[in-house]
Length: 215
Length: 215
DNA sequence: GCGTAATTACACAGGTCTGTGTAACTAAAA
DNA sequence: TTTTAGTTACACAGACCTGTGTAATTACGC
Figure 1 (cartoon, chains in turn green, brown, red, yellow):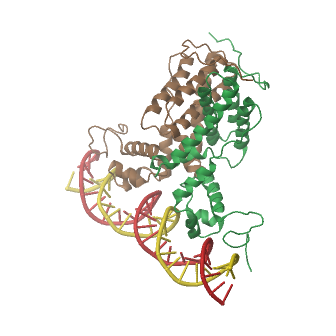
Figure 2 (cartoon, chains in turn green, orange, yellow, purple):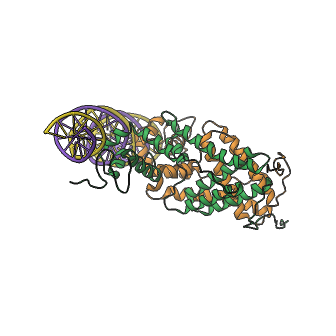
Figure 3 (cartoon, protein in one colour):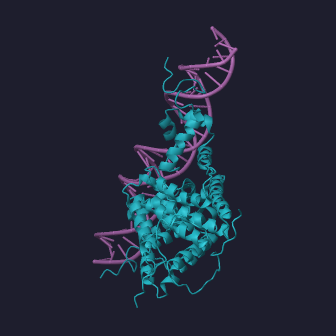
């Protein structure tokens, strides 16, 4: 008996993976869509990468558009709640970004990329809808933390923080420079301090000084 | 004398435009590439939009890649020098952004979009090279203005400002919300003030206050 | 063994894309 | 007029794309 690479059957009792076929397809689509681009990857490529027939792929997803939507929905993960102080959580966001930038397989924000790629031709508009929901969820996450910190205008500051996040992502996408995350972190520190948030670790005695203007 | 590139020669007697065929192609490619996406637009579509044959297009550009490169190079425009005070110029950047966001035909940063669309399959890597050069030129523009203002670390602050620019662009791309530019402007104001820059118009008495933390 | 359900191989329709080849046409320059 | 250069119409190659149809195969539960 061959039982090949996992085990057998429709729901294969695979020792290591323990994945549904649908999960395997989605996982592979996620990798290729994100790394190479949605338009650049055809369903044949995905099926070939897994080693299945194109027909099997279409037995699990009715169309490529459905696969794209599933891909984006799968990328929509909420940050898990943390017991660390809110200010630390906020700054840790940028540390996490820096780590992801340093990774070889970082290719920007999948939602922004999808909107840029698919453009206004988004068939059922689900792509843009998902992208907007994701961006808003990030903003809300910041806002709630800022509310806990008691800042005067959490809505406005949360928006400014997501600008720094998305800005550093866009910059890193074209420049491949993880330092963009550090720059964003520094800017976020200034904005937080300006809003009255007390930060314990003054890890950079930057700015607030001013050279004399020549003239 | 060869009387430049429009005056006469093999061009058709077009009364109003006075454009080279090459310019017309590039102009149309620019519009379609930017609005619909590079991968979404074929050379046939561009030729049809102008009303010329595909053959003519290929007589002026050896390949679609060359046309893409020309499109991006054409988008690479330096901001013209201004005699306004540096701080005003910096903040005016965000006002200009807000105006562009409000326009119906704004679809994000063409360079970021191109990198996102073409991905790592960028044939001769010219796309990413151009994109990097553009982003850097923007940063340098900010940096030089900040140097004139005498801030302590113009390099770092310039980077933070471009993060706000690109962040607001990315956010507007998915959310279609020109308010992102205002949020970026407010954040830029805080960063400038924190760096010791004197701003004359305090157009928003925001932040710097802090509600009592519950607990 | 038998039934059931997933999967496979494979062909194919119909569309799009980039890029080329060619002969005829147009209009200005010489 | 003759030459020359740009343009046009049109066919076509070769590739890729999404999605379907079908009959054979596999491997399970019973």
